[in-house]
Image 1 (spheres, rainbow, N blue to C red):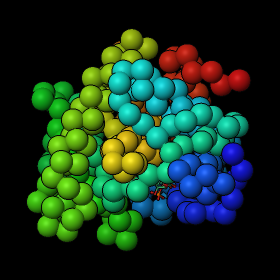
Image 2 (spheres, rainbow, N blue to C red):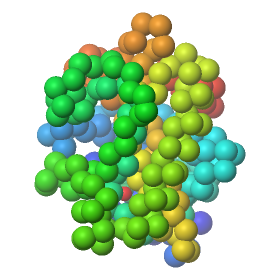
Image 3 (tube, rainbow, N blue to C red):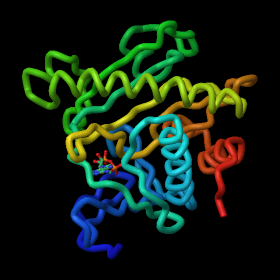
Image 4 (cartoon, helix red, strand yellow):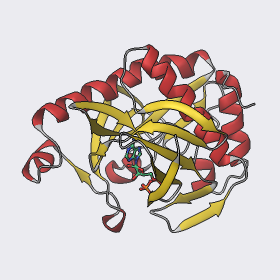
Length: 237
Ligand code: ADP
């Protein structure tokens, strides 16, 4: 598959067209951003780690019957994926309270949420990704009713699979963000699943092993990502 023109350069990844109209190449860069791009740094090895981590997770999800855009790894920091018509929506599930949920609702960090919460956010940096609900999605036609149902279903299926995967490796899946897109009449999981877009805590010490280390200036960001990958048995060769 030949790499063609750059289609889109996001905050952490660049997306390239290929000579096949159904496929794209995603390049995971070392750029790390937080607070809607206000804090940006280059973290050595992060692109490679997130690329291989995402491929590993997508394969686990496929094995569990969840359809994803992932096709194969192409290099340390590039992967071949199916070209989706992305929905401008982020789906967030929270198993434990943290981050913006605590600020918004005035609750303390670390509360077990049973049942877990589900939130939709609009993908819009200029508006700081505002929280939206099913009615906004329908009124503005950001997705169909059936797609709303499917996104929720798939996002919770991911929770079942990944909560166990991380727990078995000594980690708590606190929360995560997913993005979906259309491909040949089906909804597929797109984008990435990495410590950039989820929260992971050590099950015993509750040490943060995700992008909160970067947001909060705790240091050891890449080391934490590497630790998570090693615990899961991700091949980093
Ligand atoms: P952002 O746009 O939020 O800065 P990234 O730096 O992660 O994000 O850029 C990656 C972009 O590629 C995102 O906008 C994402 O929605 C999009 N994308 C991810 N997977 C696919 C796919 N399979 N097909 C088309 N676009 C995709």
